[in-house]
Image (cartoon, rainbow over all chains, first blue to last red; front, side):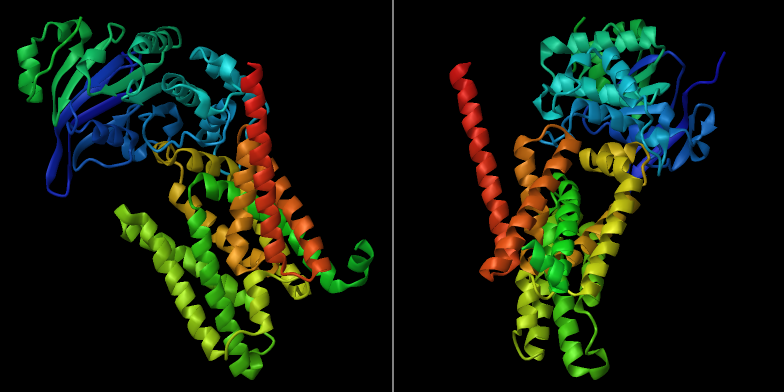
Amino acid sequence: MSKPLIELQNVSFQYEHTNVLHNISFKVEEGDFLAILGPNGSGKSTLLKLILGIVKPITGEVKLFGESSNHFFHREWIGYVSQKSNAFNSAFPATVEEVVKSGLTKKIGLFKRYPKNAKDLVMEALKSVGMEEYSTRNIGQLSGGQQQRVFIARALIAEPKLLILDEPTVGIDHENVQSFYDMLARLNEEQRKTIILVTHDVDTVSNRISHVACLNQTIHFHGYKKDFDSISNEQLNDWYGHSVRKIH
Amino acid sequence: MIEAILNYQFLQNAFLSGLIIGIIAPLLGVFIVVRRMSLIADALSHVTLAGIAGSLFLSQSITSLALLNPIYLGIVASVGGSILIERLRSLYKHYEELAIPIIMSAGIGLSAIFISLASGFSTDLMSYLFGSVSAVSRSDLFVVLIIALVVIVFLFLFFKEMFVLSFDEEYAKATGLPSKWIHLLFMIVVALVIAASMRIVGILLVSSLITLPVATAMRVSKGFKQTILYSILFGETAVIIGLISAFYLDLAPGGTIVVTSIMLLIVVITIKKFMVNMKVERG
Protein backbone atom coordinates (compact mmCIF):
# COMPACT_ATOMS: atom_id res chain seq x y z
CA MET A 1 0.00 0.00 0.00
CA SER A 2 1.37 3.40 -0.93
CA LYS A 3 1.91 6.25 1.50
CA PRO A 4 -1.15 8.38 2.26
CA LEU A 5 -0.99 11.79 0.54
CA ILE A 6 -2.19 13.48 3.69
CA GLU A 7 -2.04 12.25 7.22
CA LEU A 8 -3.04 14.21 10.31
CA GLN A 9 -2.17 12.75 13.70
CA ASN A 10 -3.85 14.18 16.81
CA VAL A 11 -3.70 17.68 15.41
CA SER A 12 -5.04 20.54 17.52
CA PHE A 13 -5.04 24.23 16.74
CA GLN A 14 -6.22 27.35 18.55
CA TYR A 15 -6.34 31.06 17.84
CA GLU A 16 -5.32 32.86 21.04
CA HIS A 17 -7.59 31.13 23.57
CA THR A 18 -10.30 29.74 21.32
CA ASN A 19 -10.00 26.12 20.40
CA VAL A 20 -10.59 25.80 16.70
CA LEU A 21 -9.61 22.23 16.02
CA HIS A 22 -9.33 19.47 18.53
CA ASN A 23 -7.54 16.16 18.19
CA ILE A 24 -7.95 15.66 14.47
CA SER A 25 -6.67 12.45 12.90
CA PHE A 26 -7.40 11.27 9.40
CA LYS A 27 -5.73 10.07 6.22
CA VAL A 28 -6.31 10.77 2.57
CA GLU A 29 -5.10 8.03 0.23
CA GLU A 30 -4.18 8.43 -3.40
CA GLY A 31 -7.26 8.48 -5.63
CA ASP A 32 -9.69 9.46 -2.84
CA PHE A 33 -12.42 11.96 -3.55
CA LEU A 34 -13.14 13.32 -0.10
CA ALA A 35 -15.74 15.87 0.98
CA ILE A 36 -15.15 17.56 4.32
CA LEU A 37 -18.51 18.69 5.69
CA GLY A 38 -18.84 21.26 8.39
CA PRO A 39 -21.04 24.20 9.35
CA ASN A 40 -19.69 27.76 9.44
CA GLY A 41 -17.15 28.12 12.23
CA SER A 42 -16.40 24.40 12.38
CA GLY A 43 -12.74 25.01 11.57
CA LYS A 44 -12.85 24.05 7.86
CA SER A 45 -10.71 26.94 6.66
CA THR A 46 -8.22 26.40 9.47
CA LEU A 47 -7.98 22.74 8.57
CA LEU A 48 -7.16 23.71 4.98
CA LYS A 49 -4.59 26.24 6.20
CA LEU A 50 -2.95 23.48 8.24
CA ILE A 51 -2.81 21.19 5.22
CA LEU A 52 -1.45 23.98 3.00
CA GLY A 53 1.15 24.81 5.66
CA ILE A 54 -0.06 28.41 6.13
CA VAL A 55 -0.50 27.76 9.86
CA LYS A 56 1.29 25.20 12.03
CA PRO A 57 -0.49 22.87 14.48
CA ILE A 58 -0.12 23.52 18.23
CA THR A 59 0.07 19.80 18.91
CA GLY A 60 0.14 16.77 16.63
CA GLU A 61 1.63 16.37 13.20
CA VAL A 62 0.60 17.06 9.62
CA LYS A 63 2.26 14.81 7.05
CA LEU A 64 2.11 15.57 3.34
CA PHE A 65 3.16 12.87 0.88
CA GLY A 66 4.78 11.02 3.79
CA GLU A 67 6.87 14.04 4.88
CA SER A 68 6.29 16.20 7.91
CA SER A 69 4.79 19.47 6.64
CA ASN A 70 7.84 21.32 7.99
CA HIS A 71 10.03 19.37 5.60
CA PHE A 72 7.70 19.38 2.63
CA PHE A 73 8.89 21.57 -0.20
CA HIS A 74 6.74 20.43 -3.11
CA ARG A 75 3.83 22.80 -2.72
CA GLU A 76 3.28 22.59 -6.49
CA TRP A 77 2.01 19.03 -5.96
CA ILE A 78 -1.02 20.54 -4.26
CA GLY A 79 -3.46 22.52 -6.39
CA TYR A 80 -5.63 24.93 -4.44
CA VAL A 81 -8.91 26.48 -5.53
CA SER A 82 -10.27 29.09 -3.14
CA GLN A 83 -13.82 30.27 -2.61
CA LYS A 84 -14.92 32.22 -5.63
CA SER A 85 -16.23 35.13 -3.61
CA ASN A 86 -12.85 35.76 -1.99
CA ALA A 87 -10.11 38.19 -2.96
CA PHE A 88 -10.38 37.88 -6.74
CA ASN A 89 -11.40 41.12 -8.41
CA SER A 90 -13.97 40.33 -11.09
CA ALA A 91 -13.16 43.45 -13.12
CA PHE A 92 -9.52 42.41 -13.43
CA PRO A 93 -8.34 42.92 -17.02
CA ALA A 94 -7.01 39.46 -17.79
CA THR A 95 -7.95 36.80 -20.32
CA VAL A 96 -8.76 33.24 -19.29
CA GLU A 97 -5.51 32.17 -20.93
CA GLU A 98 -3.46 34.59 -18.80
CA VAL A 99 -5.18 33.47 -15.61
CA VAL A 100 -4.63 29.76 -16.30
CA LYS A 101 -1.02 30.34 -17.32
CA SER A 102 -0.34 32.06 -13.99
CA GLY A 103 -0.95 28.68 -12.33
CA LEU A 104 2.55 27.71 -13.50
CA THR A 105 4.18 30.48 -11.45
CA LYS A 106 5.15 28.44 -8.38
CA LYS A 107 6.17 25.40 -10.41
CA ILE A 108 8.54 27.34 -12.65
CA GLY A 109 10.04 29.18 -9.70
CA LEU A 110 11.36 32.69 -9.16
CA PHE A 111 13.31 34.57 -11.84
CA LYS A 112 12.28 32.21 -14.66
CA ARG A 113 9.97 32.82 -17.56
CA TYR A 114 6.98 30.79 -18.78
CA PRO A 115 7.98 27.86 -21.01
CA LYS A 116 7.48 28.05 -24.79
CA ASN A 117 4.71 25.46 -24.77
CA ALA A 118 2.75 27.34 -22.06
CA LYS A 119 -0.10 27.96 -24.49
CA ASP A 120 -0.50 24.24 -25.23
CA LEU A 121 -0.48 23.51 -21.50
CA VAL A 122 -3.17 26.18 -20.98
CA MET A 123 -5.38 24.66 -23.68
CA GLU A 124 -4.92 21.18 -22.27
CA ALA A 125 -5.88 22.34 -18.77
CA LEU A 126 -8.90 24.23 -20.12
CA LYS A 127 -9.96 21.17 -22.08
CA SER A 128 -10.05 19.01 -18.97
CA VAL A 129 -12.54 21.42 -17.37
CA GLY A 130 -14.52 21.87 -20.62
CA MET A 131 -13.58 25.53 -21.09
CA GLU A 132 -11.26 25.43 -24.13
CA GLU A 133 -13.56 27.70 -26.14
CA TYR A 134 -13.22 30.54 -23.65
CA SER A 135 -9.44 31.06 -23.67
CA THR A 136 -9.52 34.55 -25.19
CA ARG A 137 -12.43 35.86 -23.10
CA ASN A 138 -11.87 38.25 -20.21
CA ILE A 139 -12.25 36.45 -16.89
CA GLY A 140 -14.84 38.99 -15.69
CA GLN A 141 -17.21 38.13 -18.57
CA LEU A 142 -17.72 34.55 -17.39
CA SER A 143 -20.39 33.25 -15.03
CA GLY A 144 -19.47 32.17 -11.49
CA GLY A 145 -19.44 28.49 -12.43
CA GLN A 146 -17.29 29.11 -15.50
CA GLN A 147 -14.83 31.17 -13.46
CA GLN A 148 -14.56 28.38 -10.94
CA ARG A 149 -13.73 25.94 -13.76
CA VAL A 150 -11.03 28.33 -14.98
CA PHE A 151 -9.56 28.41 -11.48
CA ILE A 152 -9.48 24.62 -11.44
CA ALA A 153 -7.66 24.72 -14.79
CA ARG A 154 -5.21 27.19 -13.19
CA ALA A 155 -4.55 24.58 -10.50
CA LEU A 156 -4.39 21.67 -12.99
CA ILE A 157 -1.80 23.27 -15.28
CA ALA A 158 0.90 22.71 -12.65
CA GLU A 159 -0.03 18.99 -12.69
CA PRO A 160 -0.80 18.66 -8.98
CA LYS A 161 -1.26 15.22 -7.48
CA LEU A 162 -3.84 16.58 -5.07
CA LEU A 163 -6.59 19.15 -5.60
CA ILE A 164 -8.02 21.06 -2.66
CA LEU A 165 -11.20 23.04 -3.22
CA ASP A 166 -12.67 25.41 -0.63
CA GLU A 167 -16.47 25.58 -1.03
CA PRO A 168 -16.24 25.45 -4.82
CA THR A 169 -19.98 25.48 -5.47
CA VAL A 170 -20.78 28.68 -3.56
CA GLY A 171 -22.29 31.10 -6.04
CA ILE A 172 -22.93 28.51 -8.74
CA ASP A 173 -26.52 28.02 -9.98
CA HIS A 174 -28.16 24.91 -8.71
CA GLU A 175 -28.46 23.36 -12.20
CA ASN A 176 -24.74 23.70 -12.81
CA VAL A 177 -23.64 22.17 -9.52
CA GLN A 178 -24.24 18.62 -10.75
CA SER A 179 -22.23 19.07 -13.94
CA PHE A 180 -19.50 20.67 -11.84
CA TYR A 181 -19.31 17.52 -9.70
CA ASP A 182 -19.36 15.37 -12.85
CA MET A 183 -16.31 17.26 -14.06
CA LEU A 184 -14.49 16.74 -10.75
CA ALA A 185 -15.40 13.05 -10.87
CA ARG A 186 -13.87 12.79 -14.35
CA LEU A 187 -10.65 14.38 -13.08
CA ASN A 188 -10.69 11.91 -10.20
CA GLU A 189 -11.33 8.85 -12.37
CA GLU A 190 -9.55 9.61 -15.64
CA GLN A 191 -6.58 11.66 -14.42
CA ARG A 192 -6.30 9.89 -11.04
CA LYS A 193 -6.33 13.21 -9.20
CA THR A 194 -6.91 12.97 -5.48
CA ILE A 195 -9.50 15.56 -4.51
CA ILE A 196 -10.47 17.13 -1.21
CA LEU A 197 -13.38 19.51 -1.20
CA VAL A 198 -14.69 21.45 1.72
CA THR A 199 -18.32 22.48 1.99
CA HIS A 200 -20.74 23.64 4.65
CA ASP A 201 -23.69 22.33 2.78
CA VAL A 202 -24.67 18.70 3.29
CA ASP A 203 -27.13 18.95 0.40
CA THR A 204 -24.43 19.53 -2.17
CA VAL A 205 -22.56 16.34 -1.41
CA SER A 206 -22.89 14.41 -4.58
CA ASN A 207 -22.90 10.70 -5.23
CA ARG A 208 -19.66 11.17 -7.10
CA ILE A 209 -17.44 11.39 -4.04
CA SER A 210 -15.81 8.36 -2.43
CA HIS A 211 -15.30 9.54 1.15
CA VAL A 212 -16.89 11.93 3.62
CA ALA A 213 -15.49 13.54 6.75
CA CYS A 214 -17.77 15.37 9.18
CA LEU A 215 -16.01 18.20 10.92
CA ASN A 216 -17.10 20.37 13.80
CA GLN A 217 -14.00 21.28 15.82
CA THR A 218 -13.15 17.60 15.69
CA ILE A 219 -13.75 14.81 13.17
CA HIS A 220 -17.04 13.09 14.03
CA PHE A 221 -17.02 10.72 11.11
CA HIS A 222 -14.59 9.77 8.40
CA GLY A 223 -15.31 6.97 5.99
CA TYR A 224 -16.87 5.79 2.75
CA LYS A 225 -19.73 7.71 1.23
CA LYS A 226 -22.03 4.67 1.56
CA ASP A 227 -21.40 4.53 5.30
CA PHE A 228 -22.09 8.25 5.55
CA ASP A 229 -25.43 7.67 3.84
CA SER A 230 -26.51 5.37 6.63
CA ILE A 231 -25.96 8.06 9.26
CA SER A 232 -29.28 9.42 10.51
CA ASN A 233 -30.23 13.06 10.28
CA GLU A 234 -30.61 13.08 14.08
CA GLN A 235 -27.00 12.04 14.47
CA LEU A 236 -25.87 14.84 12.14
CA ASN A 237 -28.00 17.35 14.04
CA ASP A 238 -26.27 16.24 17.19
CA TRP A 239 -22.81 16.87 15.70
CA TYR A 240 -23.64 20.13 14.08
CA GLY A 241 -25.94 21.56 16.74
CA HIS A 242 -28.65 22.56 14.29
CA SER A 243 -31.06 21.01 11.89
CA VAL A 244 -29.35 19.21 9.00
CA ARG A 245 -31.03 17.31 6.23
CA LYS A 246 -29.56 14.96 3.69
CA ILE A 247 -30.96 14.70 0.21
CA HIS A 248 -30.35 11.49 -1.65
CA MET B 1 10.59 71.72 -32.50
CA ILE B 2 13.00 68.92 -33.44
CA GLU B 3 15.62 71.55 -34.26
CA ALA B 4 15.11 73.13 -30.85
CA ILE B 5 15.53 69.76 -29.15
CA LEU B 6 18.76 69.12 -31.07
CA ASN B 7 20.08 72.55 -30.11
CA TYR B 8 19.13 72.87 -26.48
CA GLN B 9 20.32 70.44 -23.85
CA PHE B 10 17.53 71.35 -21.40
CA LEU B 11 14.94 70.32 -24.00
CA GLN B 12 16.74 67.04 -24.61
CA ASN B 13 16.69 66.37 -20.87
CA ALA B 14 12.99 67.15 -20.60
CA PHE B 15 11.96 65.12 -23.65
CA LEU B 16 14.08 62.07 -22.88
CA SER B 17 12.94 62.05 -19.24
CA GLY B 18 9.34 62.52 -20.39
CA LEU B 19 9.52 59.63 -22.86
CA ILE B 20 11.01 57.31 -20.25
CA ILE B 21 8.45 58.30 -17.61
CA GLY B 22 5.68 57.90 -20.19
CA ILE B 23 6.64 54.22 -20.28
CA ILE B 24 7.43 53.37 -16.66
CA ALA B 25 4.64 55.31 -14.91
CA PRO B 26 1.74 53.65 -16.78
CA LEU B 27 3.58 50.29 -16.80
CA LEU B 28 3.70 50.23 -13.02
CA GLY B 29 0.36 52.03 -12.96
CA VAL B 30 -1.42 48.95 -14.33
CA PHE B 31 -0.38 46.99 -11.24
CA ILE B 32 -1.23 49.91 -8.95
CA VAL B 33 -4.71 50.34 -10.43
CA VAL B 34 -5.68 46.65 -10.51
CA ARG B 35 -4.51 46.28 -6.92
CA ARG B 36 -6.71 49.28 -6.02
CA MET B 37 -3.76 51.26 -4.71
CA SER B 38 -4.20 54.46 -6.74
CA LEU B 39 -4.51 56.61 -3.62
CA ILE B 40 -1.25 55.27 -2.24
CA ALA B 41 0.52 56.81 -5.22
CA ASP B 42 -1.05 60.15 -4.27
CA ALA B 43 0.04 59.85 -0.65
CA LEU B 44 3.59 59.00 -1.70
CA SER B 45 3.83 61.97 -4.03
CA HIS B 46 3.01 64.30 -1.13
CA VAL B 47 5.69 62.65 0.98
CA THR B 48 8.11 63.21 -1.89
CA LEU B 49 7.20 66.90 -1.72
CA ALA B 50 8.32 66.96 1.93
CA GLY B 51 11.71 65.58 0.83
CA ILE B 52 12.02 68.14 -1.96
CA ALA B 53 10.98 71.08 0.27
CA GLY B 54 13.34 69.85 2.99
CA SER B 55 16.18 69.66 0.51
CA LEU B 56 15.44 73.17 -0.84
CA PHE B 57 15.46 74.48 2.73
CA LEU B 58 18.75 72.70 3.54
CA SER B 59 20.43 74.00 0.40
CA GLN B 60 19.44 77.55 1.43
CA SER B 61 20.69 77.28 4.98
CA ILE B 62 23.79 75.12 4.59
CA THR B 63 26.15 76.41 1.93
CA SER B 64 27.93 73.10 1.37
CA LEU B 65 24.56 71.59 0.38
CA ALA B 66 23.68 74.41 -2.01
CA LEU B 67 24.23 72.22 -5.06
CA LEU B 68 22.47 69.12 -3.76
CA ASN B 69 19.89 67.89 -6.26
CA PRO B 70 16.54 67.83 -4.36
CA ILE B 71 15.54 64.66 -6.20
CA TYR B 72 17.76 62.59 -3.87
CA LEU B 73 15.99 63.64 -0.67
CA GLY B 74 12.72 63.30 -2.60
CA ILE B 75 13.59 59.66 -3.33
CA VAL B 76 14.56 59.02 0.30
CA ALA B 77 11.26 60.51 1.54
CA SER B 78 9.20 58.59 -1.00
CA VAL B 79 10.82 55.21 -0.27
CA GLY B 80 10.63 55.89 3.48
CA GLY B 81 6.96 56.79 3.08
CA SER B 82 6.21 53.59 1.18
CA ILE B 83 7.73 51.47 3.96
CA LEU B 84 5.83 53.47 6.61
CA ILE B 85 2.55 52.95 4.73
CA GLU B 86 3.15 49.20 4.83
CA ARG B 87 3.88 49.29 8.57
CA LEU B 88 0.73 51.31 9.20
CA ARG B 89 -1.35 49.01 7.02
CA SER B 90 -0.36 46.03 9.13
CA LEU B 91 -0.91 48.03 12.33
CA TYR B 92 -4.47 48.99 11.32
CA LYS B 93 -5.40 45.64 9.77
CA HIS B 94 -9.11 46.41 9.59
CA TYR B 95 -8.70 50.04 8.48
CA GLU B 96 -5.93 49.67 5.90
CA GLU B 97 -6.92 52.84 4.04
CA LEU B 98 -6.17 54.89 7.19
CA ALA B 99 -2.49 54.64 6.31
CA ILE B 100 -3.11 56.88 3.30
CA PRO B 101 -4.47 60.01 5.07
CA ILE B 102 -1.92 59.58 7.87
CA ILE B 103 1.04 59.54 5.49
CA MET B 104 -0.46 62.13 3.18
CA SER B 105 -1.06 64.67 5.96
CA ALA B 106 2.39 64.00 7.41
CA GLY B 107 3.84 64.72 3.96
CA ILE B 108 1.87 67.93 3.42
CA GLY B 109 2.46 69.09 7.02
CA LEU B 110 6.22 68.65 6.75
CA SER B 111 6.23 70.29 3.32
CA ALA B 112 4.36 73.34 4.69
CA ILE B 113 6.92 73.73 7.47
CA PHE B 114 9.91 73.39 5.14
CA ILE B 115 8.38 75.74 2.57
CA SER B 116 7.80 78.45 5.19
CA LEU B 117 11.29 77.91 6.62
CA ALA B 118 12.73 78.30 3.13
CA SER B 119 10.90 81.65 2.99
CA GLY B 120 7.95 80.71 0.83
CA PHE B 121 7.34 79.61 -2.75
CA SER B 122 10.15 79.99 -5.21
CA THR B 123 10.03 79.34 -8.95
CA ASP B 124 12.14 76.29 -8.20
CA LEU B 125 9.46 74.89 -5.92
CA MET B 126 6.74 75.70 -8.46
CA SER B 127 8.60 73.61 -11.03
CA TYR B 128 8.54 70.67 -8.63
CA LEU B 129 4.82 71.09 -7.99
CA PHE B 130 3.63 71.28 -11.60
CA GLY B 131 6.59 70.08 -13.64
CA SER B 132 8.86 72.00 -15.92
CA VAL B 133 10.24 71.83 -19.45
CA SER B 134 13.27 73.96 -18.68
CA ALA B 135 14.34 72.81 -15.21
CA VAL B 136 15.26 69.17 -15.95
CA SER B 137 19.00 68.78 -15.54
CA ARG B 138 21.36 66.11 -16.86
CA SER B 139 21.64 64.64 -13.38
CA ASP B 140 17.80 64.46 -13.20
CA LEU B 141 17.79 62.59 -16.51
CA PHE B 142 20.45 60.27 -15.17
CA VAL B 143 18.37 59.49 -12.07
CA VAL B 144 15.28 58.86 -14.23
CA LEU B 145 17.29 56.46 -16.39
CA ILE B 146 18.53 54.48 -13.39
CA ILE B 147 15.04 54.27 -11.92
CA ALA B 148 13.68 53.06 -15.28
CA LEU B 149 16.31 50.36 -15.24
CA VAL B 150 15.26 49.30 -11.73
CA VAL B 151 11.61 49.08 -12.85
CA ILE B 152 12.47 46.98 -15.87
CA VAL B 153 14.69 44.60 -13.90
CA PHE B 154 12.01 44.29 -11.20
CA LEU B 155 9.28 43.41 -13.68
CA PHE B 156 11.58 41.15 -15.70
CA LEU B 157 12.28 39.14 -12.55
CA PHE B 158 8.85 39.23 -10.92
CA PHE B 159 6.29 39.72 -13.69
CA LYS B 160 4.52 36.41 -13.19
CA GLU B 161 4.57 36.71 -9.40
CA MET B 162 3.21 40.28 -9.62
CA PHE B 163 0.41 39.03 -11.86
CA VAL B 164 -0.60 36.32 -9.38
CA LEU B 165 -0.32 38.72 -6.44
CA SER B 166 -2.43 41.36 -8.18
CA PHE B 167 -5.05 38.94 -9.42
CA ASP B 168 -5.65 36.97 -6.25
CA GLU B 169 -3.64 37.66 -3.12
CA GLU B 170 -5.08 34.74 -1.18
CA TYR B 171 -4.16 32.30 -3.93
CA ALA B 172 -0.63 33.74 -4.02
CA LYS B 173 -0.23 33.03 -0.31
CA ALA B 174 -1.81 29.59 -0.57
CA THR B 175 0.61 28.53 -3.31
CA GLY B 176 3.53 29.61 -1.16
CA LEU B 177 4.78 32.64 -3.11
CA PRO B 178 6.92 35.03 -1.05
CA SER B 179 4.17 37.61 -1.48
CA LYS B 180 5.20 39.80 1.44
CA TRP B 181 8.67 40.42 0.05
CA ILE B 182 7.53 40.93 -3.49
CA HIS B 183 4.91 43.41 -2.31
CA LEU B 184 7.47 45.38 -0.30
CA LEU B 185 9.83 45.52 -3.30
CA PHE B 186 6.91 46.65 -5.44
CA MET B 187 6.12 49.48 -3.03
CA ILE B 188 9.73 50.64 -3.13
CA VAL B 189 9.73 50.59 -6.93
CA VAL B 190 6.47 52.60 -6.93
CA ALA B 191 8.11 55.17 -4.64
CA LEU B 192 11.07 55.43 -7.02
CA VAL B 193 8.83 55.96 -10.05
CA ILE B 194 6.93 58.70 -8.24
CA ALA B 195 10.18 60.48 -7.42
CA ALA B 196 11.32 60.09 -11.04
CA SER B 197 8.08 61.37 -12.55
CA MET B 198 7.72 64.51 -10.46
CA ARG B 199 10.38 66.45 -12.43
CA ILE B 200 8.25 66.34 -15.56
CA VAL B 201 4.62 66.23 -14.39
CA GLY B 202 5.12 67.71 -10.94
CA ILE B 203 4.41 66.22 -7.55
CA LEU B 204 0.75 67.17 -7.50
CA LEU B 205 0.07 65.41 -10.80
CA VAL B 206 2.33 62.35 -10.61
CA SER B 207 -0.46 59.97 -9.68
CA SER B 208 -2.48 61.05 -12.70
CA LEU B 209 0.23 59.88 -15.10
CA ILE B 210 0.20 56.59 -13.21
CA THR B 211 -3.58 56.09 -13.22
CA LEU B 212 -5.18 58.01 -16.14
CA PRO B 213 -3.57 56.08 -19.03
CA VAL B 214 -4.54 52.83 -17.28
CA ALA B 215 -8.12 54.03 -16.78
CA THR B 216 -8.26 54.81 -20.52
CA ALA B 217 -6.65 51.51 -21.55
CA MET B 218 -9.03 49.44 -19.44
CA ARG B 219 -11.99 50.76 -21.47
CA VAL B 220 -10.69 49.19 -24.68
CA SER B 221 -8.17 46.48 -23.84
CA LYS B 222 -8.64 42.76 -23.67
CA GLY B 223 -6.45 40.89 -21.25
CA PHE B 224 -3.59 42.00 -19.06
CA LYS B 225 -0.72 42.35 -21.53
CA GLN B 226 -2.92 44.41 -23.84
CA THR B 227 -3.87 46.68 -20.94
CA ILE B 228 -0.18 47.30 -20.29
CA LEU B 229 0.51 47.98 -23.95
CA TYR B 230 -2.39 50.43 -24.36
CA SER B 231 -1.57 52.16 -21.06
CA ILE B 232 1.97 52.87 -22.27
CA LEU B 233 0.60 54.03 -25.61
CA PHE B 234 -1.82 56.49 -23.98
CA GLY B 235 0.86 57.58 -21.49
CA GLU B 236 3.39 58.33 -24.21
CA THR B 237 0.82 60.17 -26.34
CA ALA B 238 -0.09 62.39 -23.40
CA VAL B 239 3.56 63.09 -22.56
CA ILE B 240 4.51 63.98 -26.15
CA ILE B 241 1.48 66.21 -26.85
CA GLY B 242 1.72 67.70 -23.35
CA LEU B 243 5.42 68.55 -23.56
CA ILE B 244 5.18 70.07 -27.05
CA SER B 245 2.21 72.25 -26.10
CA ALA B 246 3.87 73.23 -22.80
CA PHE B 247 6.96 74.34 -24.75
CA TYR B 248 5.09 76.41 -27.33
CA LEU B 249 2.44 77.86 -25.03
CA ASP B 250 4.83 78.39 -22.12
CA LEU B 251 2.72 76.35 -19.72
CA ALA B 252 3.59 73.93 -16.91
CA PRO B 253 3.92 70.49 -18.55
CA GLY B 254 2.17 68.80 -15.61
CA GLY B 255 -0.99 70.66 -16.57
CA THR B 256 -0.79 70.00 -20.32
CA ILE B 257 0.09 66.32 -19.89
CA VAL B 258 -2.75 65.68 -17.47
CA VAL B 259 -5.30 67.63 -19.52
CA THR B 260 -4.23 65.64 -22.61
CA SER B 261 -4.68 62.41 -20.62
CA ILE B 262 -8.15 63.47 -19.55
CA MET B 263 -9.07 64.35 -23.13
CA LEU B 264 -7.83 60.95 -24.33
CA LEU B 265 -9.97 59.32 -21.65
CA ILE B 266 -13.07 61.29 -22.71
CA VAL B 267 -12.49 60.50 -26.40
CA VAL B 268 -12.04 56.78 -25.71
CA ILE B 269 -15.12 56.61 -23.45
CA THR B 270 -17.22 58.45 -26.06
CA ILE B 271 -16.06 56.29 -28.98
CA LYS B 272 -16.63 53.13 -26.94
CA LYS B 273 -20.14 54.24 -26.03
CA PHE B 274 -20.90 55.13 -29.62
CA MET B 275 -19.72 51.71 -30.80
CA VAL B 276 -21.74 49.89 -28.17
CA ASN B 277 -24.85 51.86 -29.17
CA MET B 278 -24.24 51.00 -32.85
CA LYS B 279 -23.98 47.34 -31.93
CA VAL B 280 -27.23 47.48 -29.96
CA GLU B 281 -29.05 49.19 -32.84
CA ARG B 282 -27.75 46.69 -35.36
CA GLY B 283 -28.24 43.67 -33.15
